[in-house]
Length: 281
Ligand code: ZN
Image (cartoon, rainbow, N blue to C red; front, side):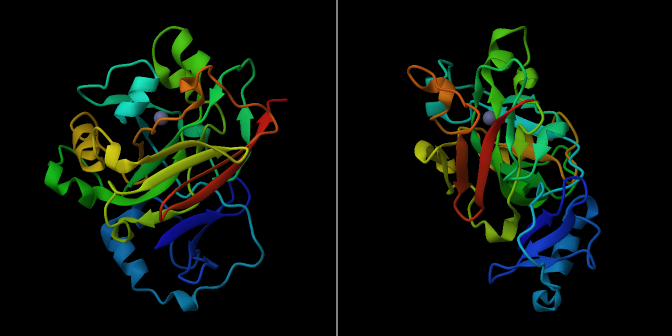
């Protein structure tokens, strides 16, 4: 299933992209795409629902973030060896973990606002993992049972805020609109192998990033198990699993986003995002 949320910011309703590519309303069936609706038994019930009976959504409304009520937005740094190299950093022996403020979350096609004082706003296409049931000290071989589904994430990053001040990357990762997620949450049963997905990102039609989740240093199952040693993962939590090479900061010379530019990014089977870059005013 491809679960989504549509409508104006803050007033999104749950929906579904049907097998024929049309939007259908789920608000008569679940309260929202999030929390208990992501539990395995809830998803199984939803899967059994006759989608042809769900009301069609008229027009083409804005898509909101594909999951509601995210408590933790965890990110993995330098999880592709070739991206670590372009960043001038060694491939890590253990996952590099940081967080993005959940207030950064926005819809997949919302404008990206370059924050005030920014000179180095950058892009990062990533596979997002959405937790479906509570995970604490989960064994590696059971880790994927705790995943509700996957989505595209643009881990928008301000490199000066991230790297040139005092410690912690969170400052460069958390501005408003720095966390587009979606267009949909593709349930895990439709993703045959999360380590065989192609990712790409273009800026103004120019291909900047291209990679495969096969190149991850730490695969999804490992990350879920690993993180669950340090904190309880809850339904709706997101793990953004790192970016392949080709970020602006890694170019020679570096290039960063400017107002008026456009991004298009996607992952095989998970859909695409399109964002316009605008100035903070
Ligand atoms: Zn990232």
